[in-house]
Image (cartoon, rainbow, N blue to C red):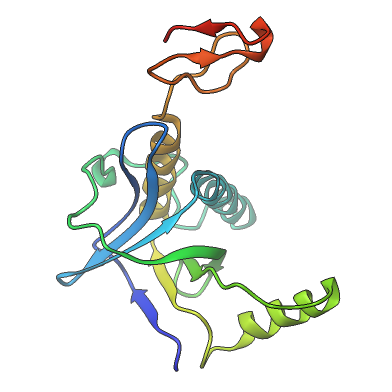
Length: 196
């Protein structure tokens, strides 16, 4: 079966968002353009890492070009997006591997999110070899979401993604673990249950 690539070049909208209540949220990347929408599920830590690395890559592009690249220092207000995910949210796949790249010719940030694949191997060497084969297989690899963003779109995505990640349950003032609405067993209180 040939690889399915969901390409958005450029997207009308590319955002990170969630479905569910804090503590039980499912995180998604969602791209849309031309009446089609693709949603892929991923972990909270993957969203945070993507946003942080995206900002770092854009900062590096600005530094290397001496400020001549069309990349704003912060997310422009006119491209910010705080609307909820487009519904219905239908998961195409769960993300395993992500990659970022800067296309200097087109002045675009490329985001790739590839489906999670389980490999049946016997050793670490076999695993590394199988992963490399999988990543290089353009024809028969797992499904992939590929999005090409302008510098302004990328900054806006990163800002929103970090806001979404930080919008979860508030941290305990003593141990920094998330507080649940029904209470929290705090290790710094020797298991004493604190109210929210």
